[in-house]
Length: 127
Figure (cartoon, rainbow, N blue to C red):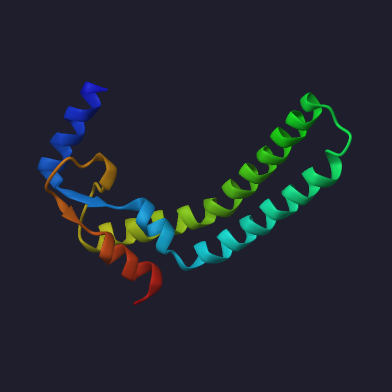
């Protein structure tokens, strides 16, 4: 872990470019629709649990709950993947336009650097 930290600090000092990936994911236009789909999936799972769990013992209820939670997580991953790919593509495009070979995630930055999040967001939203 310490080695990774020093490597990241070296890269930041040398290149100094970072992006807030989580912010970009949250700001992506497709995220609203994905969140709505996920909310609908969660509500359906809740209804399914309430219907199927009637008369079940605690162990079976727990198994059903885990099964439904896994289904929701799978759906979440399915919805996030294309958004993530679009954010990465936009980040790569901005990096290419700026002649950057490395862009570090904001969470890896301790201090300093140049934030290109706004440039990537413009690429994503066209605004």
